[in-house]
Image (cartoon, rainbow, N blue to C red; front, side, top):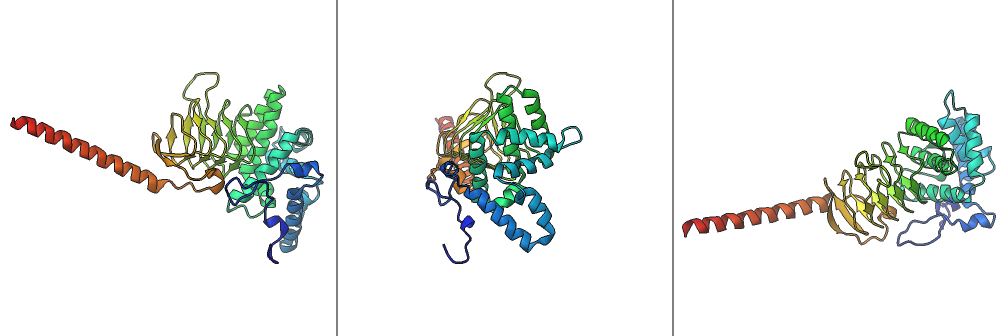
Length: 319
């Protein structure tokens, strides 16, 4: 670490996962240590000194609280409140779930580390908890998912509705989502009821994980660990996107995608095999050159076949 680098700017190492990025170590919580929360508080103090006009905002959102769960619950309650679903009621809901669920406590830290590591516009941990709606929507979904599994389905759906209205991100509370997830920007993301998303997945704006019609039952996509879904990707039906796969921006996917491969186009076609173990961590999601090379090769092949057929027909005409 150089002399100008603050401790929380380095991230918290767990394992390499074949990337220079790091993920949060949940074992730190068992030891009574919470370096992410310590970093958030330190960042807020520094920001309050640099920007005094925001000192009350930073105190209310971060510095007045004893732990990440309390601060996050306060921020979410104030973002999602409306005249009939009061902030005090939402606070009780969020605290009641987050303060007692170790799985969610781990997930909210893995997720905030994912935002810090993979989103270059996320300048700090505190900016994620205070400002990034993709992070907010994901954590509010986690609470709604817990309520859904407790049988409190009407309350879970009420939260889903508010999340969609406020953040423009629609995640059904029955969907199953892993940890270390990045919702980059998040606007327009739709995740259906029976969708499953593995750990360390990165999802850009405009992604739809939807069904194909009025069928019931298990009808939504299954996304493998470490996959990367580019902007405005549409994946329909009960199909699988393999671990470490990358779906290029604007693609329409209607059938299974192999692990560690790149697909692109409408409908999506296999472009190449990936060298990266987890493209979601590297966030290299520009498949344009590969896609157009694939299209060009296909066009040349079609032209060559057409020429061969034409030459054969001409030859038959002369005999």
